Figure 1: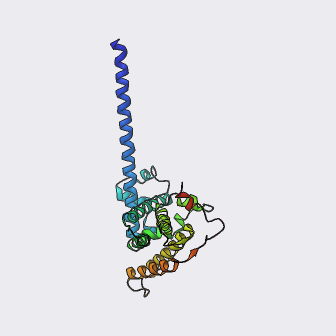
Figure 2: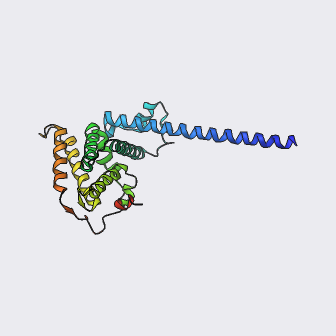
Figure 3: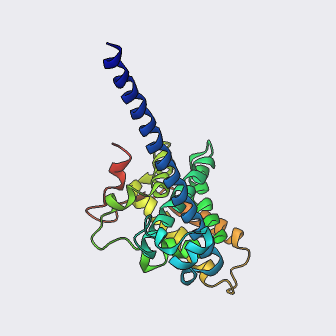
Length: 236
């Protein structure tokens, strides 16, 4: 009887060890992938888009260039991973910056968005101003924004303002208008830093004041007959 039981016990131990090893490998792989994304971020920050190459990235983390391909198919794949990482960080910063006043909470989204862009101009260009990270042709808002926590955070703050009676109209339209204003402001500030905009923080505040002031009291209609799936995402 003991001879029968013993192999079963050993098999269970082996299975447990194998699962633990697999978990460790997966955790190690995730850590290395994060290291590559962080190294890519620093390269972009220091040298811009053209400074990011597979060879430079591999050298930065002490890998052979071919090892990078175990994690990313090509440079564009790295850029997309970097964009996703930046969106997640931006969303966390937005969640940490809130207010009991729904309008001020909404303003915080725009100021955090601006602070991210102005503080990380090369990264902002990669995420928002390059063909390499442009959504595929035909992708709907529902597909795009399902993986964009920052935009969902903006929409959530807009809906809170509507619920409090501070804004009125279609939440997707309001969120898109505010996003357009914020993106346009940041793009101008980082593309034309020599222009006489004055203090960047003061300029951003002025744009926020004008945008929110213009929307208060307006009944904002949908942007089109099919405004997209972003609003539906927050109601599932």
